[in-house]
Length: 425
Image (cartoon, rainbow, N blue to C red; front, top):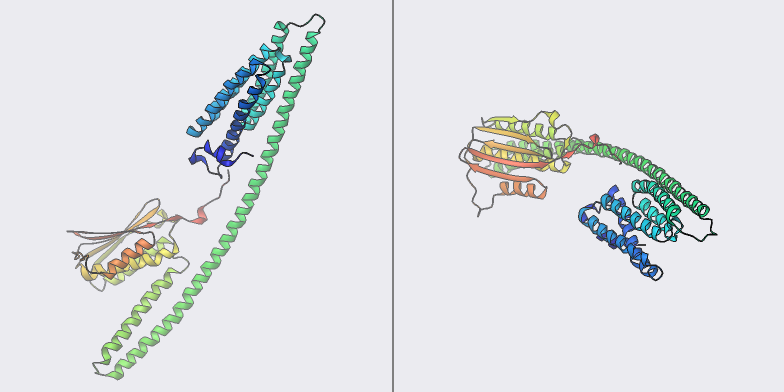
């Protein structure tokens, strides 16, 4: 077993993805070349003791080493693989012609070459099957024309028998390798079908779980809204009664007014929180509609012109944002809308939305003059807007200029799972 760090050394880092089909093929080719290189370094050294022709195998060894580094640099192997096989045929045929033609013991090296070709790539192996047959035919013809044997030897019969023998073995290897690959393809197809079934089953389970969670979130939002609404309404009514009973007591009146104001603020904040956990709060259309409605209602109190420019819903029907982001987006823009009304003196405010392939860009622009905050003095509103953005992967920017102020937030999007289709290749 070859350690992975050896063959990984010759595979580019960008192609070491175990889920990729090319990774498996590269591993197979590299391992074949590593083994071939090791054998071509060792075996010719031993065979040189018996025949000087073994030295030509070092040429093939050099090409194998070159191919390994070619793969390491480029990640490609088909061209050097073809060169390796052609060089192998040239070396083997030459050695056979120098040592007895088709009767040479070096003819067996053709089978090793065929095995290496099928091991590295089946397309090369199929080509080499015919190349082996052609090489044997050339060796047989050359043996009949040029080989000299003793007078008593029946050379034609020996050459014909050797030719038929080698042809038979070559065909056997070809059929054998074809059957092995056929079995491999069938097994691979079965694995893919099982993977599809498992993925379909997981997708169905995820859909069911998502549906359950959506129902749970909606039920939680409804129940909590009813409870908090009733309790806060009761607090507000009781505070109102207490204010009537207090009469003109100047000490109690501010305290009671504060209780009523805090109750109303808590009710508004809890309503925003409950909306954000509702089942459709990851739908950007719902978020934009919510902010638009809030802006229209809020700015009507200050006689400020408000307009919203939002793309048609069909342009982002499959875009989704993370559910946990909606609450922070709402709080950021409610703070920005409040600041624009109270601190800018603006007469016109525009809420604009731009859409790209992977994010929404939300902008709130006014024609007022914001006072640029003193950096040495803490400003909780602006600081909270920046903090929410930084902690939740949002890009926040605020720009002050002579014509007004612009608050910009970029929100990352994801594709709606219902539009995805898993494909196996």
